[in-house]
Each structure stands twice: as C-alpha cells, then as structure tokens.
Length: 103
Image 1 (cartoon, rainbow, N blue to C red):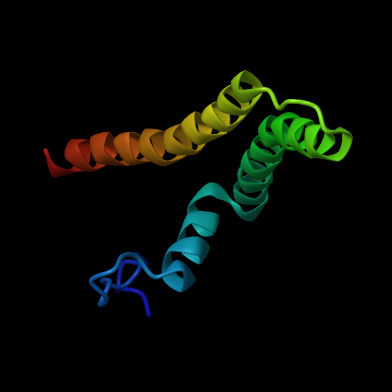
Image 2: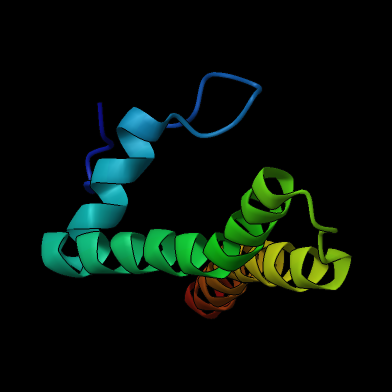
C-alpha cells in the first residue's frame, strides 16, 4: 500500500525496506527502462569483474598450476567496491535531496 501522495508505505519490519514496495517505487521514479538498464549494467559489470579471477582459479585447479592471488584480490575487490558505490552513492544523493526538501 502507498501513502496518499504516492510514496511507499512505511516499512513495518525492523529488518529493512520491503523489496515488494521499494522495487516498484524506484522503477516508477527512474522509469522502468532506466531502472532495468541500471540494474542489468551493475550485474554485467560485477560478472565481468569476477569472470577473470574465477576462470583463472578454475584453470589453475584443472591444470594443477598455482593460482594468482593478485588477480583474485583485484577482481573481487573491484567488484566489491562497485557494489558498495552502487549502494552508498544513491543514498547520498537521496539524503541531499531530502535535506533540500526539508528546508
């Protein structure tokens, strides 16, 4: 259920926002096409960043060669940084917008 102004209803669980409420809300704010494009882009970037370390590890196990820890740290680290940025940056933008509305 939404509020009278069209915003999502208050979250009733202490765990966090209900994806059934937040997902459609964000899709309507960004526009369905843009929301889909951003989501798919993030997933594709994470898969791309993690593909080389996973392939390197599996090839090393298959052929009995040593694995490259540097490759794994760089690939998985970059994916982790991207996911953190995809979480923190939108929250910062939303916070600034809410502060501007409250003034």
